[in-house]
Image (cartoon, rainbow over all chains, first blue to last red; front, top):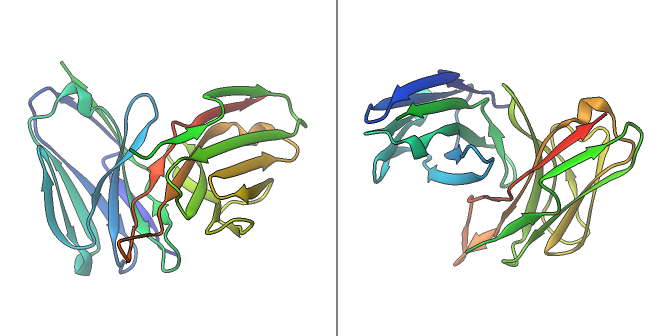
Length: 109
Length: 117
């Protein structure tokens, strides 16, 4: 099955800094999703991005499916960006995902 | 807004107990999922359901069962809890289709942190 890797595993930033999180997947994927889990455990969808680039405020994501990776950019980071960021690849069946191990981001004031 | 609720935020059970984790969604979603989250492993799918009374095994179904008697409710059952089932359990739902198009968006509950002693 599809394997999903994420890097770095941990990231500490000063407020205002920019960062790039990476997601690699082992096989061609039809689509990819980024999630954010806040420090209280709540997971929310950030981007559904099978290919190309999307932007939402200070966050943007790019997926290059042919090269099997996706990037999540966070600009001008804020303390509320802290938490764990997961990428997940849709399985080749159904509407559920294989998740990567996550990147834990800590933004310091 | 979609709301997915889980019966408990924190739960402590003893080895061998039968444990029920309940999940309810209020948006008439077709699909529901149970994941467990462990450090360094991300989320792993335990079971999912595409319809009432229907269930499919995920990646790690051993030691778990599920029940979906009503569309809005998906229960995860630990028949005989063991210490290696100590984890964060997350429920999610998905509408299936939106305006005739397949939707991949998953809505998560707040999670239940289960400790088995």
